[in-house]
Image 1 (cartoon, rainbow, N blue to C red):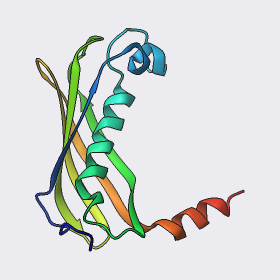
Image 2: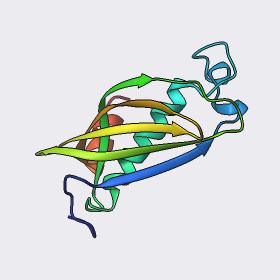
Image 3: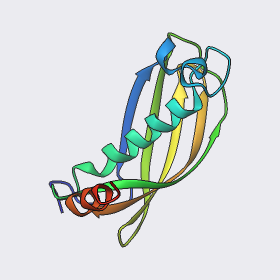
Image 4: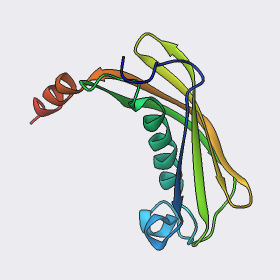
Length: 131
């Protein structure tokens, strides 16, 4: 593998600040000016990617294939949001993560995320063949 060993228990955290660009209004996922669910999901996926990226060889990456998330609380513009991913299961090339998100006051989201390890070049060749 890469410089770190791919193992259950790996964790990574990502952060952002809620701005007008990542609100439900801007992302067209609602009509209120709060942190959008798609933005929370992206932050959770970013944490999962970061969790395993240094443990994968350079010619491999992971791609998201499944996500089950609850958005538990709204977060206003200006507040920080943090997402954490924990690698809970390795089943061959299938990786399963628990993901959670917090703003400065509350737990705002939780769920499960699945990614698969793929060859970067083969994946990109397959995508290009769709053209």
